[in-house]
Image (tube, rainbow, N blue to C red):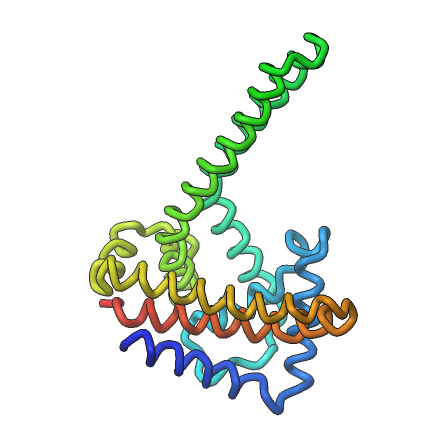
Length: 231
């Protein structure tokens, strides 16, 4: 399936799943809000569970039911993402620790400019390195997460031989281009949403309404991309 076809299919899938089904859309929006709250993400990842159901290949866009499974699958996704991002988090922790020690040294030295520079350099370097690692890891994590959705096995999310085979079947260049295109599409949508932020109530409302659609579109896009390289 060509990228244009994947984009069109993902759009139609999202439209069919939400437009005219306002109760479902509102429930998903509420679940998304709950999940992004400081206490919501680790405790009530039901929205994530729904996205996993989309990635499982359900057609059309699934209904919101079997809440306990959505909850469990959301937790499993959180665990998978955490494991994948352990290395970038460790890098941030190490560089952040060095920055903290440098800040203490700077304070003891009465605000020595060289010590302050070391703090800033450490923080900046840590963020850059961690960000680069996160991007590289995400290339594999996308396919791994879809594998989990298809198999209901956390272990399959880290089956790197199968992940590499799938990416190889898609084509490394084609796969990376497809991810970049998805990122560009999401950035354009986000930019349009930001424009409305000049009117806070309207901008916030639009952001909440659009969020479930963006998530379903992205999940469907990644699912079709996975299917194009699945054995």
